[in-house]
Amino acid sequence: MTDENERAVQAAIDGELRLLDPEVRASPALVRELLDPEFTEIGASGHWWDAESILTAMGSVTPESPVKVSKMSGVVLAPGVVHLTYFADNQGRRAWRSSLWRLTEAGWRVYFHQGTLAGRVER
Image 1: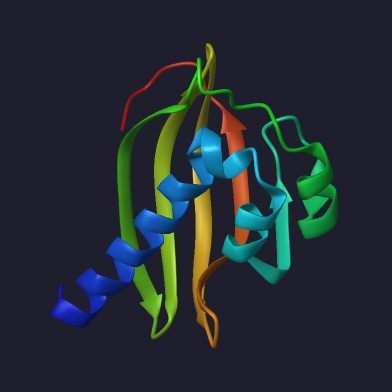
Image 2: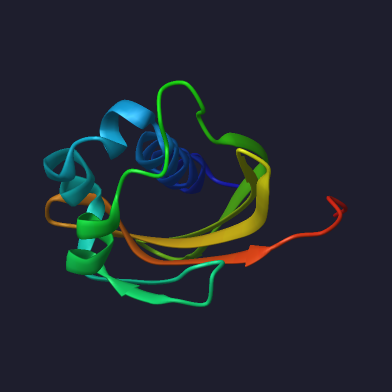
C-alpha cells in the first residue's frame, strides 16, 4: 500500500472511530461533520436511514457502554474512496459493519454504512 493510500485508510478509520465515540454520538453537530450530505445506511435491523433520520435517532451509545470494535481494516477502492470493514459489539448486539468513506472539500465523510447482525466472529 502506498503512503497516500495508508493515509486515506487511516483517515477513514479515524473518522469511523470518532463516529463510535460516545461523546461525538451525543452531539448531532459533531456527527453531522462526519456524514456525507448524501449519506445512507442500512442498519443491522434492516432499517434504511439517511443523514437526517440517523441524526434524529442517535443515542444508542452511552459513555458507560461504548461500542467494542475489532478486526477493523480498510482498502482504497479509488482515489478518495475507502471501504472499511469491522466487527462491533454494542452491549451484546454484535454486527459486522461496512462503511464507504469519500474525500470531499470538507474532508473525509462517511457516504454509506451497513450493519449485518453476526452469530460467530470468524474471518
